[in-house]
Length: 78
Image (cartoon, rainbow, N blue to C red; front, side, top):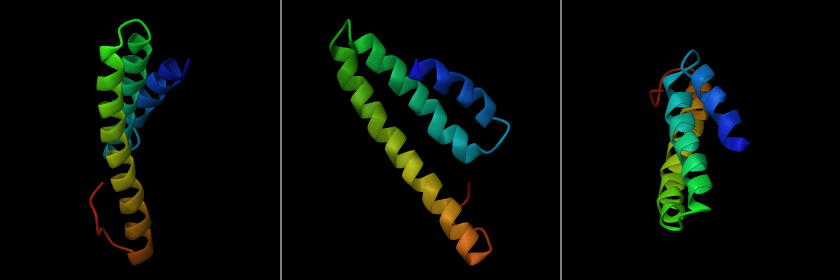
């Protein structure tokens, strides 16, 4: 269910910002890899690594939003 929700949120993110795309694309891949991992354990490991990539993208995106807003200019590009 989360994979499906994230998939259509990913489609919407393309109209909002590149920062959101950089979070939602790997998140969608993560959820689907973890779902496949229920049937083939090797995919859980790959899904875990993809989750780490997603977290890094989310941290960057959140830092960019906060810093850009706080300084009133683009400190970190989105």
